[in-house]
Image (tube, rainbow, N blue to C red; front, side, top):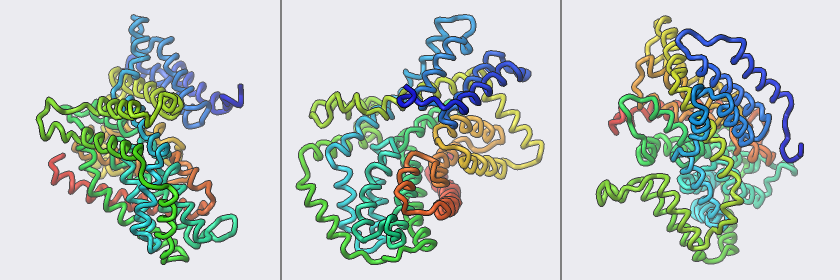
Length: 490
């Protein structure tokens, strides 16, 4: 059983101790209900367990749901309602949007469409090493809206393409030839991932959670739709994708700068794949229809009656793929990442929601906001400080989800207390939640896959990650803010 479900004793003990200390040893601050403080204890222990990887995140989430139900912290006087509260996360639409979208994305690998797209762009633009880098960026950007697992996209689809290209030029870490082209392409391969993850709500699993947290705390309510997010991210995202390969090229230039054989290699791979199959055509059509529905094109053309809910659109896409036998039910059942995401999402969203409902998030934001105001710092410098602390604290996290759950809501509310424009600060913090993935070789699931291929030394990875974090933050804060002003978002 230990091999199937490896409980790590030390992280588990630390998580339990954190929970017990907050619950029993630290009294609830004035103005905070005891049950709200107790929920914070469970939430904190959950985050510590996730960070320490005491158990798989889904298993930790099941335990957390159980503890919330058993202790009745959300509703001490009504045990039945307490159980309903503990399970309420499973009714969240955004959770199912991501889960169903992950299931849909399986069709990319099953049909070979994702690989075909990558080789196609390399066949067009791959005559130079920079051209290969931009081909990988274009391919991942096209795949990003329909692959909520950034790990599956960057590590499962794009990375094998990158490795096959590097190997074809004799660049192999086992032979000591990483610098020929593999080191450069590996760094590009990884650093595309945080940018594309920031560009679409459906490009990485935590994004819908962020939308949920922003919309819960903005008054008056402001709906961040799929289209609003995508339009807001378009300009800074494209600029980041254009600049990033050049910066890496300048700092760690590849030995091979011209690759006239790369398009030939890619065409050979496409030839091996054969003509585009009917399954790929149907998958491509489904993705196109999904993008139209997520961007609310039917509503814009025919009126609001024809608008399709984001989650409903995902269910429609999955239903079509099932009916067309592109995916069968076994494919859906075997999509462990989707069911795992639905489970841990439900637990974390539930706890975050009740921390807000019970007033603890508001208390924290006012306390920190008052402290910053007392220091005489304006909202501009105060929110910039918050963003920098939020981003660079990711050095201490091996899970983007855990980081977001631990800090996003609190930091967002502190920014609001300081007087920051809600949509402006919300968007910067939201996009930063993906951009911070660039920092380390353990920052997100994609990182260990690409770092583990052995092309990049640790020192180079961290150096590039830090430089690009500054570059991307500058682009998204400065140019992004101007773009959002033009759009009228703030």
